[in-house]
Image 1 (cartoon, rainbow, N blue to C red):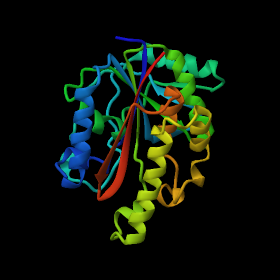
Image 2 (image 1 turned 120 degrees about the vertical axis):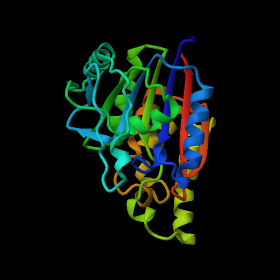
Image 3 (image 1 turned 45 degrees about the vertical axis):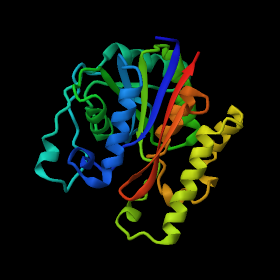
Image 4 (image 1 turned 180 degrees about the horizontal axis):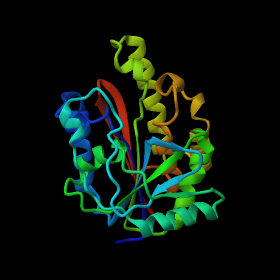
Amino acid sequence: MSNQRRALFLSHGGGPLPLLGDPAHGEMVACLKDIAATIERPSAIAVVSAHWEASQPSITSASHPPLIYDYSGFPKESYEITYPCPGDPPLAQTVAEQLTNAGFAAHLDGARGFDHGLFVPLKIMYPDADIPCIQVSLVKTLNAEEHLRLGQALQGVGDPSLLLIGSGFSFHNMRAFYTPDTDESKAMNEAFEAWLLETCSDPQLSEAERRQRLADWETAPFARYCHPRAEHLLPLHVCYGFAASACSRAYGLQILKKQASMFLWAVEG
């Protein structure tokens, strides 16, 4: 394998619905399968999930973390999903050391399991559950610059076989998911997605400009309509901080009848 940093920001959809055959997640499932078939198989995966916020960056460190069914109101089979991938304590230790070296008070968590931000997309991408995984939390300040720095600190992990996944959703207004679309709501969704695509993929932007746009994401068109809270967007900031370049490929799709995006980075060096 070449010396690459590989990162994927994915939009993980609504709870367990992608695993239940929900037609509004058909494009998402197909996209994730395509990505897994396209990229070189990783030897380990680190997932930054929108569904874990901690006072300082925390990392799962158990050898076999359990699953956390962190959703409610779904059919019985939603709570019987399995994804018995192993943890990776040595990788967790390395990640904690790199974050500590960068000034974060990183915390190894041997008790926490994997939430659906990890097991739902990975069950689609790598159904055999045979790739060691760790999960990394967001910082509950939800500060954009802090998460860019967190991703930058992970560059020091230095394992080209690692895949960093930011598991969030490029559109995450819960009320809007349950409200009929209007021309105005579609336009707001599409305007933010266009800004995100330009920010992540435009080769004419310098990396200083790209980073500043992400740091100032709240000034993007209809940013706070699309993200009343930042937790589903910030995994993208971690991915960009890690990759520090324009994405290698962008994917536009519909999930739950909303425009959404995924971004893949494979960066030499």
